[in-house]
Length: 427
Image 1: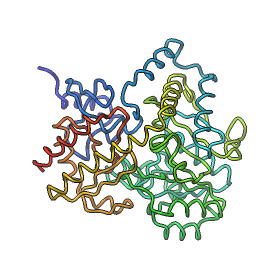
Image 2: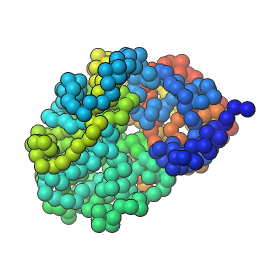
Image 3: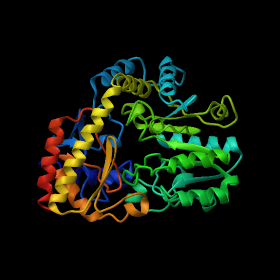
Image 4: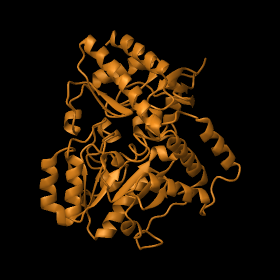
Protein backbone atom coordinates (compact mmCIF):
# COMPACT_ATOMS: atom_id res chain seq x y z
CA UNK A 1 0.00 0.00 0.00
CA UNK A 2 1.55 3.37 -1.02
CA UNK A 3 2.52 5.83 1.70
CA UNK A 4 0.18 8.76 2.34
CA UNK A 5 1.05 12.40 3.08
CA UNK A 6 0.38 11.57 6.73
CA UNK A 7 2.91 8.71 6.58
CA UNK A 8 5.59 10.93 5.09
CA UNK A 9 4.94 13.69 7.64
CA UNK A 10 4.99 11.24 10.58
CA UNK A 11 8.29 9.84 9.38
CA UNK A 12 9.74 13.35 9.00
CA UNK A 13 8.70 14.36 12.51
CA UNK A 14 10.76 11.53 13.96
CA UNK A 15 13.99 13.09 12.69
CA UNK A 16 13.23 16.75 11.80
CA UNK A 17 12.03 19.23 14.43
CA UNK A 18 8.33 19.68 13.68
CA UNK A 19 8.76 17.63 10.52
CA UNK A 20 9.78 20.70 8.51
CA UNK A 21 12.79 22.95 8.07
CA UNK A 22 10.74 26.18 8.04
CA UNK A 23 7.62 26.57 10.24
CA UNK A 24 4.92 27.66 7.77
CA UNK A 25 5.52 24.49 5.75
CA UNK A 26 3.90 22.49 8.58
CA UNK A 27 0.44 23.87 7.68
CA UNK A 28 -0.44 24.61 11.32
CA UNK A 29 -2.54 27.57 10.16
CA UNK A 30 -4.73 25.55 7.80
CA UNK A 31 -4.61 22.07 9.33
CA UNK A 32 -3.87 18.77 7.65
CA UNK A 33 -0.64 17.25 6.46
CA UNK A 34 1.64 19.25 4.16
CA UNK A 35 2.38 18.37 0.58
CA UNK A 36 5.62 16.51 0.06
CA UNK A 37 6.89 17.59 -3.34
CA UNK A 38 8.73 15.38 -5.83
CA UNK A 39 9.31 17.78 -8.75
CA UNK A 40 8.14 20.94 -10.49
CA UNK A 41 8.13 22.34 -14.01
CA UNK A 42 6.90 25.70 -15.28
CA UNK A 43 3.76 26.72 -13.37
CA UNK A 44 3.14 23.18 -12.07
CA UNK A 45 4.30 21.34 -8.99
CA UNK A 46 3.91 17.59 -8.33
CA UNK A 47 3.51 15.85 -4.99
CA UNK A 48 5.03 12.50 -4.09
CA UNK A 49 1.99 10.64 -5.42
CA UNK A 50 2.39 12.36 -8.80
CA UNK A 51 -0.63 14.65 -8.41
CA UNK A 52 -0.22 17.93 -10.30
CA UNK A 53 -1.07 21.40 -8.98
CA UNK A 54 -0.90 24.90 -10.42
CA UNK A 55 1.63 26.49 -8.10
CA UNK A 56 1.01 29.97 -6.71
CA UNK A 57 3.55 29.60 -3.89
CA UNK A 58 6.56 29.49 -6.23
CA UNK A 59 8.95 28.58 -3.41
CA UNK A 60 7.62 31.68 -1.59
CA UNK A 61 8.44 33.99 -4.47
CA UNK A 62 11.77 33.19 -6.16
CA UNK A 63 10.53 31.25 -9.18
CA UNK A 64 9.42 34.20 -11.32
CA UNK A 65 10.49 32.37 -14.49
CA UNK A 66 8.62 29.26 -13.41
CA UNK A 67 10.14 26.04 -12.10
CA UNK A 68 13.08 24.32 -13.77
CA UNK A 69 13.57 26.95 -16.45
CA UNK A 70 15.67 25.18 -19.12
CA UNK A 71 18.36 27.87 -19.40
CA UNK A 72 18.80 28.06 -15.63
CA UNK A 73 18.93 24.28 -15.20
CA UNK A 74 21.39 23.94 -18.09
CA UNK A 75 23.83 26.48 -16.68
CA UNK A 76 23.61 24.95 -13.17
CA UNK A 77 24.53 21.55 -14.63
CA UNK A 78 27.48 22.94 -16.58
CA UNK A 79 28.74 24.86 -13.56
CA UNK A 80 28.35 21.92 -11.14
CA UNK A 81 30.59 19.82 -13.37
CA UNK A 82 33.39 22.31 -12.70
CA UNK A 83 32.92 22.24 -8.91
CA UNK A 84 30.29 23.31 -6.41
CA UNK A 85 32.29 25.55 -4.08
CA UNK A 86 35.75 27.09 -4.15
CA UNK A 87 35.95 29.51 -1.23
CA UNK A 88 37.61 31.93 -3.63
CA UNK A 89 36.43 34.73 -5.96
CA UNK A 90 34.94 33.89 -9.34
CA UNK A 91 34.28 36.05 -12.39
CA UNK A 92 30.54 35.31 -12.19
CA UNK A 93 30.35 37.08 -8.81
CA UNK A 94 31.63 40.28 -10.38
CA UNK A 95 29.16 39.96 -13.26
CA UNK A 96 26.32 39.45 -10.78
CA UNK A 97 27.37 42.51 -8.78
CA UNK A 98 27.60 44.63 -11.94
CA UNK A 99 24.09 43.60 -12.97
CA UNK A 100 22.60 44.36 -9.54
CA UNK A 101 24.32 47.76 -9.33
CA UNK A 102 23.20 48.72 -12.83
CA UNK A 103 19.60 47.66 -12.14
CA UNK A 104 19.25 49.43 -8.76
CA UNK A 105 20.93 52.86 -8.78
CA UNK A 106 21.01 53.22 -4.97
CA UNK A 107 23.38 50.23 -4.79
CA UNK A 108 26.96 51.38 -5.37
CA UNK A 109 28.66 48.38 -3.75
CA UNK A 110 27.19 44.97 -2.94
CA UNK A 111 28.05 42.01 -0.71
CA UNK A 112 26.57 38.58 -1.48
CA UNK A 113 25.24 36.39 1.33
CA UNK A 114 23.56 32.99 1.57
CA UNK A 115 20.06 34.17 2.48
CA UNK A 116 17.80 37.16 2.94
CA UNK A 117 18.17 36.73 6.70
CA UNK A 118 21.95 37.10 6.41
CA UNK A 119 21.43 40.18 4.27
CA UNK A 120 19.19 41.95 6.81
CA UNK A 121 21.45 40.90 9.67
CA UNK A 122 24.41 42.42 7.86
CA UNK A 123 22.49 45.59 7.02
CA UNK A 124 21.61 46.15 10.69
CA UNK A 125 25.23 45.59 11.73
CA UNK A 126 26.44 47.99 9.05
CA UNK A 127 23.97 50.67 10.13
CA UNK A 128 24.98 50.36 13.78
CA UNK A 129 28.67 50.37 12.97
CA UNK A 130 28.36 53.28 10.56
CA UNK A 131 26.30 55.51 12.87
CA UNK A 132 27.69 54.44 16.23
CA UNK A 133 24.09 54.10 17.48
CA UNK A 134 22.37 50.93 18.70
CA UNK A 135 18.60 51.39 18.45
CA UNK A 136 16.67 50.37 15.33
CA UNK A 137 13.05 50.66 14.21
CA UNK A 138 10.92 48.32 12.13
CA UNK A 139 7.20 47.97 11.38
CA UNK A 140 4.60 45.58 12.81
CA UNK A 141 4.08 42.60 10.53
CA UNK A 142 7.18 43.16 8.42
CA UNK A 143 9.33 40.05 8.53
CA UNK A 144 13.06 40.47 7.89
CA UNK A 145 14.27 36.96 8.59
CA UNK A 146 14.90 35.32 11.96
CA UNK A 147 17.47 37.90 13.08
CA UNK A 148 17.32 38.44 16.87
CA UNK A 149 16.98 42.21 16.56
CA UNK A 150 14.15 41.92 14.04
CA UNK A 151 11.87 39.21 15.50
CA UNK A 152 9.70 41.78 17.25
CA UNK A 153 6.08 41.84 16.03
CA UNK A 154 7.34 40.17 12.87
CA UNK A 155 5.28 38.84 9.98
CA UNK A 156 5.38 35.59 7.99
CA UNK A 157 5.42 32.54 10.28
CA UNK A 158 5.43 34.74 13.36
CA UNK A 159 2.03 36.16 12.40
CA UNK A 160 0.77 32.79 11.16
CA UNK A 161 1.62 31.22 14.52
CA UNK A 162 0.34 34.30 16.42
CA UNK A 163 3.69 35.01 18.06
CA UNK A 164 4.88 38.50 18.98
CA UNK A 165 8.45 37.53 19.72
CA UNK A 166 10.61 34.48 20.35
CA UNK A 167 12.16 32.89 23.44
CA UNK A 168 15.93 32.96 23.19
CA UNK A 169 16.09 36.65 22.37
CA UNK A 170 17.40 38.64 25.36
CA UNK A 171 15.12 41.40 26.66
CA UNK A 172 18.10 43.74 26.48
CA UNK A 173 18.27 43.23 22.73
CA UNK A 174 14.51 43.51 22.23
CA UNK A 175 14.54 46.86 24.01
CA UNK A 176 16.80 48.20 21.25
CA UNK A 177 14.11 47.53 18.64
CA UNK A 178 11.06 49.74 18.18
CA UNK A 179 8.14 48.37 16.16
CA UNK A 180 5.65 50.81 14.66
CA UNK A 181 2.33 50.34 12.85
CA UNK A 182 2.98 49.97 9.12
CA UNK A 183 1.62 52.87 7.05
CA UNK A 184 1.14 55.13 10.09
CA UNK A 185 2.63 58.56 9.39
CA UNK A 186 1.64 59.74 12.86
CA UNK A 187 3.53 56.94 14.61
CA UNK A 188 6.51 57.43 12.33
CA UNK A 189 6.77 61.16 12.98
CA UNK A 190 6.26 60.79 16.74
CA UNK A 191 8.84 58.02 17.05
CA UNK A 192 11.56 59.81 15.11
CA UNK A 193 10.92 63.05 17.00
CA UNK A 194 11.42 61.15 20.25
CA UNK A 195 14.15 58.64 19.36
CA UNK A 196 15.77 60.04 16.22
CA UNK A 197 19.09 60.79 17.91
CA UNK A 198 19.32 57.16 19.13
CA UNK A 199 18.23 55.34 15.96
CA UNK A 200 20.87 53.70 13.80
CA UNK A 201 18.39 52.46 11.21
CA UNK A 202 14.82 52.05 10.11
CA UNK A 203 14.16 48.89 8.11
CA UNK A 204 11.00 48.39 6.07
CA UNK A 205 9.49 46.21 3.40
CA UNK A 206 8.51 48.91 0.87
CA UNK A 207 5.70 46.54 -0.14
CA UNK A 208 4.74 44.42 2.84
CA UNK A 209 4.51 40.78 1.88
CA UNK A 210 4.69 38.92 5.17
CA UNK A 211 1.38 39.85 6.80
CA UNK A 212 -0.27 39.33 3.48
CA UNK A 213 0.35 41.83 0.70
CA UNK A 214 -0.05 45.41 1.90
CA UNK A 215 1.03 48.31 -0.32
CA UNK A 216 2.46 51.51 1.16
CA UNK A 217 0.03 54.39 1.55
CA UNK A 218 0.62 57.62 -0.33
CA UNK A 219 3.51 59.65 1.15
CA UNK A 220 4.40 56.98 3.75
CA UNK A 221 7.74 55.96 2.22
CA UNK A 222 8.45 59.51 1.02
CA UNK A 223 8.10 60.83 4.55
CA UNK A 224 10.15 57.95 5.91
CA UNK A 225 12.97 58.86 3.53
CA UNK A 226 12.75 62.56 4.43
CA UNK A 227 12.79 61.97 8.19
CA UNK A 228 15.61 59.41 8.18
CA UNK A 229 17.77 61.63 5.99
CA UNK A 230 17.09 64.67 8.18
CA UNK A 231 18.02 62.78 11.37
CA UNK A 232 21.07 60.86 10.13
CA UNK A 233 19.29 57.49 10.29
CA UNK A 234 20.19 54.73 7.83
CA UNK A 235 17.13 53.75 5.77
CA UNK A 236 17.07 50.06 4.82
CA UNK A 237 14.68 48.73 2.19
CA UNK A 238 14.10 45.01 2.55
CA UNK A 239 13.43 44.04 -1.07
CA UNK A 240 14.04 40.33 -0.58
CA UNK A 241 10.54 39.69 -1.95
CA UNK A 242 9.99 42.76 -4.14
CA UNK A 243 13.42 42.92 -5.77
CA UNK A 244 13.09 42.13 -9.51
CA UNK A 245 9.47 40.98 -9.06
CA UNK A 246 7.69 44.06 -10.44
CA UNK A 247 10.35 45.39 -12.80
CA UNK A 248 13.99 44.86 -13.62
CA UNK A 249 15.24 46.41 -10.40
CA UNK A 250 13.66 47.21 -7.07
CA UNK A 251 10.32 48.64 -6.06
CA UNK A 252 12.39 51.69 -5.15
CA UNK A 253 12.97 52.29 -8.88
CA UNK A 254 9.23 52.58 -9.44
CA UNK A 255 8.64 55.07 -6.61
CA UNK A 256 11.95 56.92 -7.17
CA UNK A 257 13.14 56.69 -3.56
CA UNK A 258 16.76 55.80 -2.83
CA UNK A 259 17.34 54.02 0.50
CA UNK A 260 20.80 53.93 2.05
CA UNK A 261 20.94 50.13 2.06
CA UNK A 262 18.94 47.48 0.20
CA UNK A 263 18.53 43.81 1.04
CA UNK A 264 17.86 41.33 -1.76
CA UNK A 265 17.21 37.60 -2.02
CA UNK A 266 14.78 35.10 -3.56
CA UNK A 267 14.64 36.01 -7.29
CA UNK A 268 18.33 36.93 -7.50
CA UNK A 269 19.19 33.30 -6.70
CA UNK A 270 17.05 31.70 -9.40
CA UNK A 271 15.83 29.18 -6.82
CA UNK A 272 19.19 28.67 -5.11
CA UNK A 273 20.02 29.93 -1.57
CA UNK A 274 21.23 33.51 -1.91
CA UNK A 275 20.98 37.01 -0.51
CA UNK A 276 22.69 40.35 -0.94
CA UNK A 277 23.07 43.67 0.82
CA UNK A 278 24.16 46.78 -1.02
CA UNK A 279 23.97 50.52 -0.92
CA UNK A 280 25.91 53.72 -0.53
CA UNK A 281 29.64 53.39 -0.99
CA UNK A 282 30.38 55.34 2.21
CA UNK A 283 28.47 52.73 4.23
CA UNK A 284 29.49 49.61 2.31
CA UNK A 285 33.17 50.57 2.57
CA UNK A 286 32.90 50.03 6.33
CA UNK A 287 32.52 46.26 5.83
CA UNK A 288 35.57 43.98 6.12
CA UNK A 289 38.07 43.77 4.49
CA UNK A 290 37.74 47.49 3.63
CA UNK A 291 36.54 48.42 7.11
CA UNK A 292 36.21 46.99 10.60
CA UNK A 293 32.58 45.81 10.47
CA UNK A 294 32.91 42.05 10.12
CA UNK A 295 30.83 39.80 7.88
CA UNK A 296 31.81 36.55 6.23
CA UNK A 297 30.39 33.34 4.79
CA UNK A 298 32.07 30.19 3.55
CA UNK A 299 29.47 29.66 0.82
CA UNK A 300 28.70 33.32 0.07
CA UNK A 301 28.87 33.82 -3.68
CA UNK A 302 29.11 30.07 -4.30
CA UNK A 303 29.23 29.28 -8.02
CA UNK A 304 25.91 27.41 -8.29
CA UNK A 305 23.81 30.10 -6.61
CA UNK A 306 25.56 32.90 -8.47
CA UNK A 307 25.24 31.35 -11.92
CA UNK A 308 21.58 30.46 -11.33
CA UNK A 309 20.85 34.00 -10.16
CA UNK A 310 22.92 35.67 -12.85
CA UNK A 311 21.21 33.68 -15.60
CA UNK A 312 17.78 34.47 -14.13
CA UNK A 313 18.54 38.19 -14.03
CA UNK A 314 19.90 38.15 -17.58
CA UNK A 315 16.67 36.50 -18.79
CA UNK A 316 14.58 39.05 -16.89
CA UNK A 317 16.59 41.94 -18.31
CA UNK A 318 15.96 40.66 -21.83
CA UNK A 319 12.21 40.51 -21.23
CA UNK A 320 11.75 43.71 -19.23
CA UNK A 321 8.76 44.72 -21.34
CA UNK A 322 6.99 41.48 -20.37
CA UNK A 323 6.54 42.62 -16.76
CA UNK A 324 3.41 44.53 -17.81
CA UNK A 325 1.93 41.33 -19.25
CA UNK A 326 2.60 39.55 -15.96
CA UNK A 327 0.86 42.41 -14.18
CA UNK A 328 -2.14 42.06 -16.51
CA UNK A 329 -2.28 38.31 -15.99
CA UNK A 330 -2.35 38.76 -12.20
CA UNK A 331 -5.03 41.43 -12.48
CA UNK A 332 -7.14 39.08 -14.60
CA UNK A 333 -6.93 36.39 -11.94
CA UNK A 334 -7.66 38.77 -9.05
CA UNK A 335 -10.59 40.44 -10.83
CA UNK A 336 -12.09 37.10 -11.73
CA UNK A 337 -11.78 35.78 -8.18
CA UNK A 338 -13.20 38.99 -6.72
CA UNK A 339 -16.26 38.65 -8.95
CA UNK A 340 -16.75 35.03 -7.92
CA UNK A 341 -16.60 35.87 -4.22
CA UNK A 342 -19.01 38.78 -4.71
CA UNK A 343 -21.50 36.55 -6.55
CA UNK A 344 -21.33 34.09 -3.67
CA UNK A 345 -21.82 36.87 -1.10
CA UNK A 346 -18.51 36.20 0.65
CA UNK A 347 -16.67 39.32 1.83
CA UNK A 348 -13.03 39.46 0.79
CA UNK A 349 -10.44 42.15 0.28
CA UNK A 350 -7.85 41.36 -2.39
CA UNK A 351 -4.69 43.40 -1.99
CA UNK A 352 -2.55 43.25 -5.12
CA UNK A 353 0.75 44.84 -6.06
CA UNK A 354 1.65 43.86 -9.61
CA UNK A 355 2.30 40.08 -9.64
CA UNK A 356 1.71 39.31 -5.96
CA UNK A 357 -1.52 39.43 -3.98
CA UNK A 358 -3.40 38.20 -0.90
CA UNK A 359 -7.08 37.32 -0.51
CA UNK A 360 -8.06 38.55 2.96
CA UNK A 361 -11.30 37.04 4.22
CA UNK A 362 -12.91 40.27 5.41
CA UNK A 363 -14.26 43.45 3.84
CA UNK A 364 -11.15 45.54 4.39
CA UNK A 365 -9.46 47.88 3.80
CA UNK A 366 -6.25 46.18 4.91
CA UNK A 367 -3.43 48.62 5.53
CA UNK A 368 -1.45 47.28 8.52
CA UNK A 369 -1.00 44.23 10.75
CA UNK A 370 -3.94 45.04 13.04
CA UNK A 371 -6.37 45.31 10.12
CA UNK A 372 -4.96 42.14 8.51
CA UNK A 373 -5.47 40.14 11.70
CA UNK A 374 -9.24 40.78 11.58
CA UNK A 375 -9.47 38.29 8.71
CA UNK A 376 -11.44 35.06 9.06
CA UNK A 377 -8.56 32.59 9.17
CA UNK A 378 -10.89 29.59 9.59
CA UNK A 379 -12.72 30.47 6.37
CA UNK A 380 -9.39 30.96 4.63
CA UNK A 381 -8.32 27.46 5.75
CA UNK A 382 -11.50 25.95 4.29
CA UNK A 383 -10.92 27.81 1.02
CA UNK A 384 -7.29 26.69 0.92
CA UNK A 385 -8.22 23.01 1.22
CA UNK A 386 -11.08 23.35 -1.25
CA UNK A 387 -8.69 24.83 -3.81
CA UNK A 388 -6.10 22.16 -3.07
CA UNK A 389 -8.65 19.46 -3.92
CA UNK A 390 -9.10 21.25 -7.24
CA UNK A 391 -5.35 21.08 -7.96
CA UNK A 392 -4.56 24.67 -6.97
CA UNK A 393 -1.75 25.21 -4.47
CA UNK A 394 -1.97 28.49 -2.55
CA UNK A 395 0.18 29.67 0.35
CA UNK A 396 -0.94 27.72 3.46
CA UNK A 397 -1.53 30.86 5.55
CA UNK A 398 -3.86 33.84 5.43
CA UNK A 399 -0.84 36.05 6.06
CA UNK A 400 1.33 35.14 3.08
CA UNK A 401 1.47 36.29 -0.52
CA UNK A 402 0.31 34.55 -3.68
CA UNK A 403 2.75 34.84 -6.61
CA UNK A 404 2.49 34.52 -10.37
CA UNK A 405 5.33 33.67 -12.74
CA UNK A 406 5.99 34.19 -16.42
CA UNK A 407 5.16 30.49 -16.82
CA UNK A 408 1.51 30.92 -15.75
CA UNK A 409 -0.59 30.73 -18.91
CA UNK A 410 -4.07 31.89 -19.90
CA UNK A 411 -5.14 28.27 -19.51
CA UNK A 412 -3.78 28.24 -15.94
CA UNK A 413 -5.78 31.35 -15.08
CA UNK A 414 -8.97 29.92 -16.61
CA UNK A 415 -8.47 26.62 -14.77
CA UNK A 416 -7.88 28.46 -11.49
CA UNK A 417 -11.04 30.55 -11.86
CA UNK A 418 -13.06 27.42 -12.63
CA UNK A 419 -11.57 25.77 -9.54
CA UNK A 420 -12.41 28.82 -7.46
CA UNK A 421 -16.03 28.81 -8.65
CA UNK A 422 -16.31 25.13 -7.76
CA UNK A 423 -14.61 25.56 -4.38
CA UNK A 424 -16.92 28.43 -3.41
CA UNK A 425 -19.98 26.21 -3.85
CA UNK A 426 -18.82 24.23 -0.83
CA UNK A 427 -17.87 27.12 1.45
